[in-house]
Amino acid sequence: MPIEQTLQLSLGPVLFYWTRERYAAFYREAADWPVNIVYLGELVCSRRRDMKLDDWLGIGRELAQSGKQVVLSSQALIESEADLRDLRKLCDNGEFSIEANDQSALQYLSTARLPFIAGPALNLYNPATIGVLARANMQRWHAPVEMSRSDLARLLADCRAQGLHHACEVFAYGHLPLAWSSRCFTARRHRTPKDRCQFVCQQYPEGLALRSQESRDVFTLNGIQTLSGACQDLRHEVSDMLEMGVDVARLSPRAEGMAEVVAAFDAARQGELPAPDPLALVDVEICDGYWNARPGIDNSRGRTAP
Image (cartoon, rainbow, N blue to C red; front, side):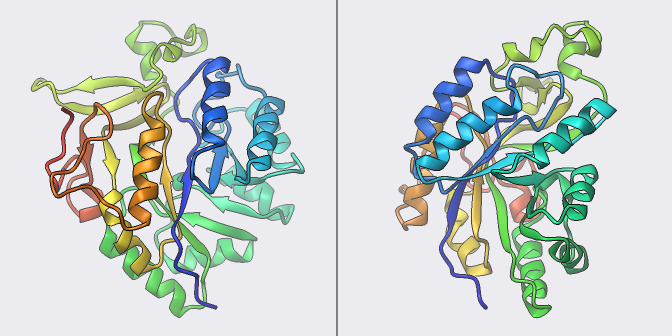
């Protein structure tokens, strides 16, 4: 059956390390936002222990009561037996679906025949791989963040031709997750070892900017994760997403201004776009290079921070 062409909005997992109070306040607000899906959990670093699984489940239940579809995100880099134990507990939560972000999660979920969402860290580039995951009980998959519009359109068409009609999600807003490492670059910036990091990344609720000699934000350091320096904004691509068969646009949380971001995307999916001189939603550089098959840092619309 063809997929109904109604774009949903998802709120991705918080990639940065916040305090318990900030998480609680953020999701209290998010309960009233026009998003359909909310991802919860610690995707980046197992040392970030302020929030336990029971805390995430509690937030998830409150969001579910507000009509949101709740998904728990697994870590993208599993490094120890303790990480595996936490992963098993996450997968066996018994209430919410899991977003699998590494092969350990895929193995466990597929063996247990549990439904899952294939996250952006899995790098799904062809119908053969998507077909394998579909047979393992995948419900939805996220396109690689560096995949261009034309390549994604081709992939979706190829999937449909092979009878694969699973929902596709696109990273539509936020600092693009580019890489993970066993080293913590934020701790290194503070000259502390990873295992005695003193949780310095909590000092940067939107990451630590890494600038070029020309003072351009090239990357954002977030513990063991490296993100883009600029913020991808695909509001103006919503109609193209619908036309090619994308089902979900993911908005990655920021510490400030997220309500305005969600409202802007909600308006865009209803056909209400800003005037040709676009508005910068937050004080940050904007990029859309990957989407347009160019270097990721490029910006086709010339949008920059005010």
